[in-house]
Image 1 (tube, rainbow, N blue to C red):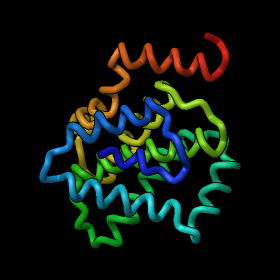
Image 2: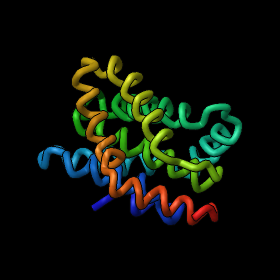
Image 3: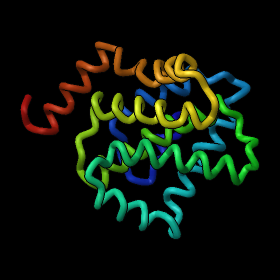
Length: 174
């Protein structure tokens, strides 16, 4: 399905799309509905009129927007879980958070013109994992396994070659 394809910002960065597809392909089928609800609720909050302008302003003033996206998603998930009285299931919440990080990175690319590539995805993913794992009581090993799901697309050499070629074409360097 690829929830990221329905992003309000427009055309999606193909690497972010592929990464989301890699995450979704590895979700336990019984967790898929919860994953989708969490992603959609997070997107609704991020793009709601009452919160969107402060989000945009914060990112505009940010010295490290990739960091702020990852940390912001952790904060968002913790607020959502608190509002749900702690009933959000952890595995789909973790994976939904990774997808929300991808949405945040896409927003940076669309709104700020940042080039989002493998390094930015890797940095945001690692920071997200390091920050959320102690908050939800998961061991670093469990979280590393989840991180590997998000990094699957970046290890696909054929896809990465096409991605780099398309980036060069967009920048006029091919």
